Amino acid sequence: MPELLLWSGIFVASLATLVTASRYFTEAAEVIGLSLGMSPFAVGVLIVATGTSLPELITAIFAVQKQASEIVAGNILGAGVSNLLFVLGVASLLSKENIRLESQNIAIDLNYLIGSAALLLLVMRDGRVEWTEGVLGAVAYVAFLFYIFREGNQAEDLVISDDVKEMSRAGKARPKDLLTLVVSGVFIYFGANYTIDALERIAEGLGVSRAVISITMLSLGTTLPESVVSATAALKGKGEIAVGNILGSCIFNALAIVSVATAFGAIRVPDEILRLPLPAYLGASILFYLLARDKNVSRWEGVLFLVLYALFIAQVAFS
Image (cartoon, rainbow, N blue to C red; front, side):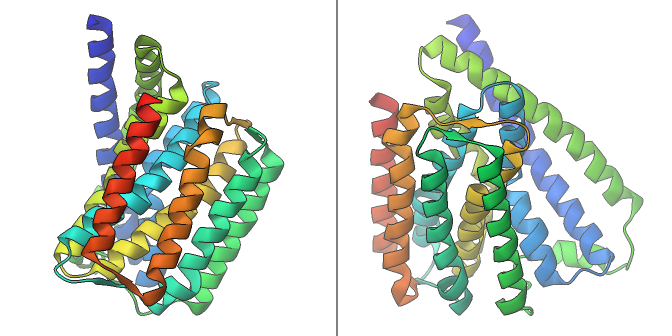
């Protein structure tokens, strides 16, 4: 028991370090990107969207390298369900009125959400994801980015905070921003490394699989950046930013993270993931797709999402 408590503390500390360092890394990258002349839209799509999923990306790479690739599948699917049900549910409850979806969300993001979930189902259903299947995800994500830049709202820069805009107006990156990028990168490295080590020890101490721990504890922790961004946007009456952030994160996780992870080795998908989390993620994607066709996400729908998420976690944890 003392050892389990020790590793639980290490897990919390290392995950907090990973998430916090990712936030500083992303903010510094935003400032540098804007200072170098990138458009706010490009920074929002390429840096902000990637930055909120940085904890999932880095832990995926470390998990594959440490021969614990089932953590990747569990974290991606758990984070996807968490984003669609928990984060979106919280955002809809915090929003002062129904969240309105932008036309881009309907025409691009929702369709890609379903497509990426279906592709994930196809490549994982045999219990293993090879690098050749990862290439398919990479091609699909590049196509998504191309579509976004071609059809997206180029004037949309609401995802960039006012502080970042102010810091970038100097026209060149400051030494402080470059130093923040490097230092936060180092903390991300050690945070991710110890997060995976602690997760393995906790799973061993509790007598459960690493996949189950990654679906519950790890996925909820790594979606904290999305939770903060989405909750803040909802409180400010900008619920459409919350939805765009959630959808972009789900698509990035399903396509890009799987692709990057398979470059370091094959991803193993155990039976406990194939039985519930994989179909649950596809089901959550379809449910959101159907409910969002009216371009509204109401508080009552948010309550439904939270109830479904609670049932999902309970089923995974106690089955």
